[in-house]
Image (cartoon, rainbow, N blue to C red; front, top):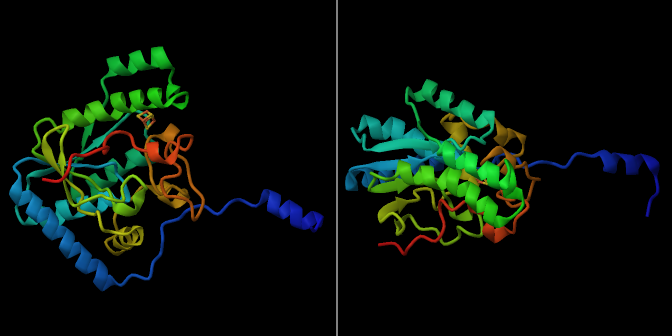
Length: 263
Ligand code: SF4
């Protein structure tokens, strides 16, 4: 083994290479075709339901879906799809800045749902501000108050909802289908990007010049609440930075768990 001081010091202080948006060799033609298929999928959903909501986490995936809803679908007169986000009170400023960027690009205001302040206060008093680090139970409680309850409110009069989930995002999503039945709410749930790759998402972002979270360029492939998200190294599981202190198969906030079989 070399004990060369200069090589040791460079490896000791070398910064790990962080994840960055992939630059795949994807043709513009392919992205145009994928865009047409996605627009058709969204158009079909819009024709089949009266009140549809896109649950946007302001991820690159959700920005792709929003782009088609706010351009092609609106031009075609499909106004049944509203876009909302869950402002948990613990998001990065960089995430919140996207709300303005979307407003500027599309003249559209994403609707914000926030947690019940009484429940938040009770959680903090009982578990502490960052009690979610201490146990899975406390983490799920925090997600219930800050995410799931507001999601339930956002969807209470909807007959379908849309998500930006993709199969290759995590071990918990490999079986994801285009259409599911959300048994908990008894409404339809659609994942129109289920068969898109990460490289295709980023090729679309670049080709159509979409506003995206600047944290993606600082090593964050998947962005949730600030204290529960960190940057990941190149080659790591893209969701490794979400609830990083937990095991891989518990890495969901409860928004998308255990759907009933598709109907
Ligand atoms: S992601 Fe973290 S801060 Fe956000 S709701 Fe869940 S536990 Fe709470």
